[in-house]
Length: 191
Image (cartoon, rainbow, N blue to C red; front, side):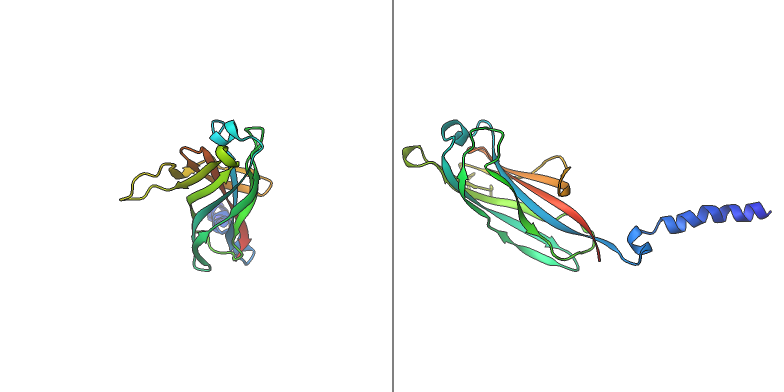
């Protein structure tokens, strides 16, 4: 009889204490903040790689960002620009090395990833007659398809690097064959 009464208590004790998140057991709740990095590369068949290796150029683009939670609300357009790009001789090297684009300073409840969309990409490479102009935008309802269409939201495989676990998305231009890769890092923190 004693064994039957004691047995269920052994089973219930791990269930009661094991189901609480680690943060609550320590007196704090585990939250998250996000960091977004960007990198720009060219496809191996990109016109700038076939005709302008070693040429100088510049790129700028617009990223629409929505990151809302109870603790922090952010919506806006980020406009990074890179004025001193040199087209690499090796097709495997990026035009713009990975760099931080945006970082949340406030820890908040887990509510999914921020919504990020690259909406336009502009720039030029080279000088004189060989100069290549880049002007890519998203397709919009009711407007003709742009000559160099920018396709955002291409989901890449998640991974991890020296900063931690990340989720990656790509925006790619149709004719100029450039890629803007966005990496979203969820960083654990205490609320």
